[in-house]
Amino acid sequence: MSFINTTLHPSVSKAITEQGYSKATPIQQQAIPATLERRDVLGCAQTGTGKTAAFLIPILQMLLEDNYPQRRPCIKALILAPTRELALQIAENTQSLSAHTTIKHVVLFGGVSQQPQIDKLRAGVDILIATPGRLKDLMNQGHVALNQVKYLVLDEADRMLDMGFIHDIKQIIRHIPADRQTLFFSATMPTEILKLTHALLRNPVRIEVTPVATAAEQVTQYVYFSEKQQKPSLLLNLLGNQASETVIVFTKMKHVADKLSRFLNKEGISAAAIHGNKSQLQRQTALERFKHRQTRVLVATDIAARGIDVDKLSHVINYDLPQTAETYVHRIGRTGRAGAAGTAISICSREEKPMLIEIQKLIKKTITVASIPGYSQKN
Ligand code: AMP
Image 1 (cartoon, protein in one colour):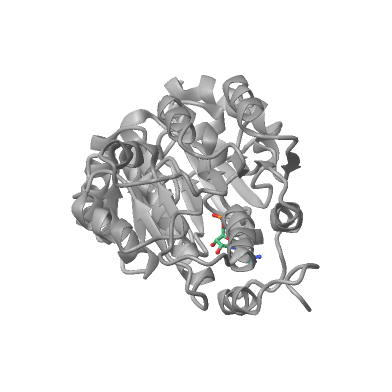
Image 2 (cartoon, rainbow, N blue to C red; image 1 turned 135 degrees about the vertical axis):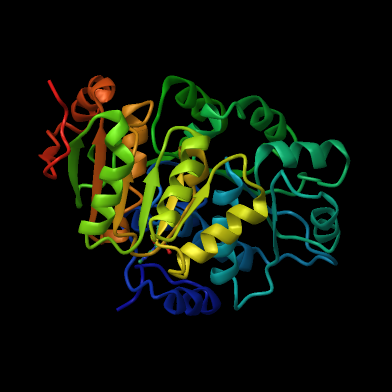
């Protein structure tokens, strides 16, 4: 059985097989042929749908087809992503999918020294993956030329907007030839994003796979009510009771993430915290250990968790409910990925009940209430 109803370059097909992708996901089924027809694409899809391969596979295919003579590689595809974790994740996918080609990629993000990135750029690059801030800095210093870019991808555009990158993005895009193909992905389509799509895309093919409100339908969801001060010991109980192998615990605040991770380790559950105050090396080490099952629990804040891609993540636990209902959908989407089942548990204090109501409104579903004896809200 072939991966998709389109003939792909043998080196790309081989990499797809090696990745274990036997069948294209719905977004891939739609985005790959449209992109190969050189159409702009507007994809409404969240992480977990296979959207990264949905834009990487056709870009690799087109770069191989273009194959114009050149002495040194120059940047022909630019992929913009909001966070370094997501940028690294895209780079990892690019590495795997381009393994049997000579296509070169470089990833740029802030928070680390510039020089190694500049050296790699000088060595020549076909696909550049970057967060907007660092890219703009290196462009301003004259280290990046975008005048040969033919393919532009904006990934998680709504997150870029939330993080205040829109101005940087507009500035970056001014340096890219107008005669390009643009692939635009966003989990949600607020007005500001729609305006941006009108400015950037030409008659795009619209693809919508899992609208945010109905995402992660395969995730079983529970809520436990608790007093605020009981939350740490309830969490411990939940981790003890559940057949939860790999768990992400979400907290709103960075210091709470640190405190919880220390508490869990003291109680004999291996845990690590990742958040924006951790260095790049600390975050990567924590992620690698988690991916290799050396750490059972990753305690994360929302921004730090973007781009985390862990196979078979069994549980997501919301130690705190998030600030917005949409973030809840993003959080629980970390489990139940690519068709697998998953469980999402929320611990809800009295103060958080209004947010629980908002979440249920958005997902159009009442979350099952569960309880453990000894933990409840006193009336
Ligand atoms: P993404 O939405 O790009 O973050 O991808 C989510 C996960 O699905 C990643 O672990 C990918 O490696 C995986 N994936 C992507 N495409 C496929 C496919 N066609 N079949 C199975 N898994 C896939």
